[in-house]
Image 1 (cartoon, helix red, strand yellow):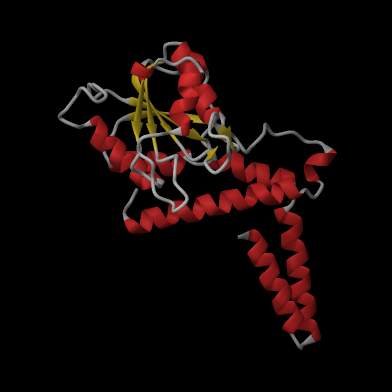
Image 2 (image 1 turned 45 degrees about the vertical axis):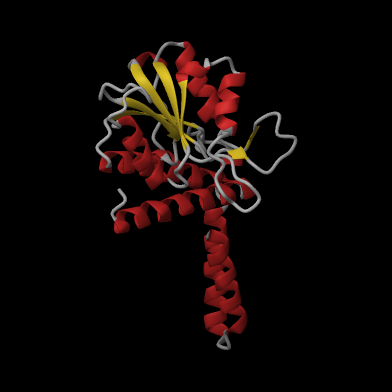
Length: 247
């Protein structure tokens, strides 16, 4: 979205016939571009938005860890492995939590495998395959494969956890550990609260860095522009979910 704003202002300046108006538009565009590409400013925004990481010693022990999907490439071949985009921490940190005994079972929430027509393949999951490849036993990995967005993650996970057929996950009703990216966790938490699932949040996959005051932190960066775009999309999603009553 930031790139759309910059392009819109540039087009407006191009069409403006009043020289003073044109100059102001170009000045505004340049100012915004400098702000949008400033690593320090963008990092401060992300530090404010993202749920910070929790020290492992402070993480409680849980029956179930719910990890949200959306971090794999589903159209890469050969299909004999799992290909990750940014966000692979969702898997690696979940495996770590399982190894540490912080979670006894892993519930993967989200459809992760599609055919060429975009239909969900409910019999396969690249995330599930990756957990098994990491040595997590089959008996400890469960799959909720219907959801395609965060609202559905919460809705279908709640249905699965609260199902009368307790043999699916055998959840006792105690809080689960909710695992997803730090920038995505505010929306996920709001959705799971709406579904009345008690949880402890565990954030992974951060776009923010620790605050540092050095020269390069203030130099224009295309990476900062990209991170700002990620933040803006997530913020819009958060607001839309609130308006629609999803969270």
